Amino acid sequence: MSLIPRSARHSDRPDYDEILEEIRREIHPHLSRGHVDDRIPALADLRPDGFGLALRTVDGALHQTGDAVEEFSIQSISKVFSLTLALQLEGDALWDRVGRAPSSSPFNSLAQLEHDRGIPQNPFVNAGAIILVDTILGHRGDGSDAILEFARSVTGNDNIRYNPKVTRSELEHSHRNAALAHLLRDFGNLHSEVDTVLEAYSRYCSLEMSCADLTQAVQYLAQGGLNPLTGDVVLTASLTKRTNALLLTSGVYGAAGDFAYRVGLPAKSGIAGGIVAIMPGMWCAAVWSPRLNRTSNSYAGTLALERLTTVTGTSVF
Image 1: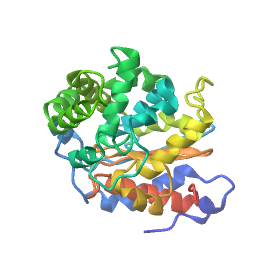
Image 2: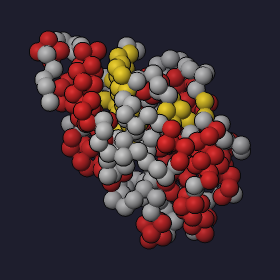
Image 3: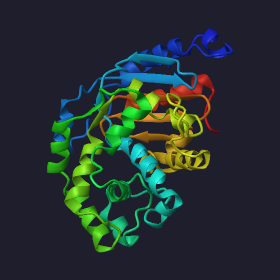
Image 4: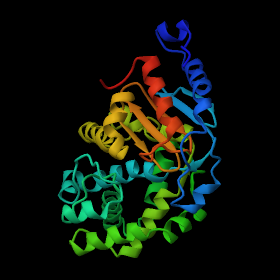
């Protein structure tokens, strides 16, 4: 890959516009690599060679390139918001129902959940995210719009919507998630009705946002738990630290070790090709490219974030 110009590498403040545009050019030959996920048929509508990259600094400056304002289904990135809401509601009591360990098993593994007797290994595997939804429903009653309300509050964008076509497709192909939910219920670790939880879970995953939206949405994780738009406390500083730790160890599933080695940031991925990453105290980045690698993370997106941290010389390590 080509090198970023010296002026961008050595200035007091990096020229993020120049850096992102150079990364886009470097990544372009790789956009045909990988595969678009076919487990949710509605995601087949995504442009397979789409690519967007955005970075927002903690002072609010937005830098972007490519399809950074194109909306896409954020899928499991919504689990960041579910975890935030569950922690707001339960605090550390949440960990009585879900673990905090990295997982090398598939994110929808029934065997792992059976082995662990109904306690999901972490909140980002599907069983763990189902617990998060159940927690929200237990406090909010009809909490099906909780994630939508949260996303709008942290982005200041009231135009963010669920995609009903994706929601239906999620529900029609949720057999394994239904099995996970029934298994959780059998172990006494699911309190709401299975159908109610699955419907809310599918709606959360169908939330559509752009890379630019996402860089604003996760700003509280870069700013000690504060929503910079309102000054409100989204999470305490302690819970923010712990959430970032979980993103680092579990946010990209079994690829967490390799991702930490290559990118070095807390991050969360989704099977529609999105990834958000947080550099605490500095910036948040989001990338979208639908073709996935063998660990179900965006192929080009992972490469782009690796280049971003390498060129800027920033990571949590």
